Length: 90
Image 1 (spheres, helix red, strand yellow):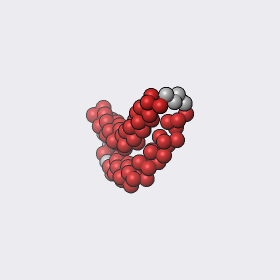
Image 2 (cartoon, helix red, strand yellow; image 1 turned 120 degrees about the vertical axis):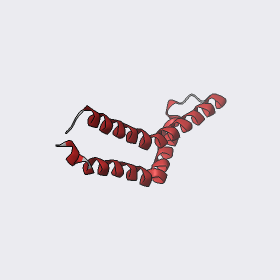
Image 3 (cartoon, one colour; image 1 turned 90 degrees about the horizontal axis):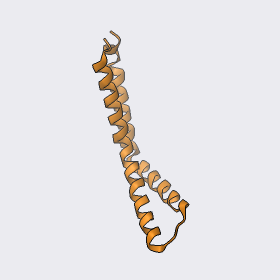
Image 4 (cartoon, helix red, strand yellow; image 1 turned 120 degrees about the horizontal axis):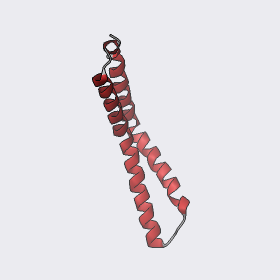
């Protein structure tokens, strides 16, 4: 039977999976943004669009390196959800 504990567990596990899978790209974007910001401060270049291309390339590289792991995490969560589906509809 679907009760509040089951819903809470599903939502908590789903949010944890989202955070765990998106954290590498967010960290790469943060580090690249900080590095470009320091570079802009040192060189007095105040171009707002300068961070866009390095961030896109960095996130693309992170997805290329960690895409397999991210996909495995999402598939494992989805399989766990579908395998326990019969418990939720009682």
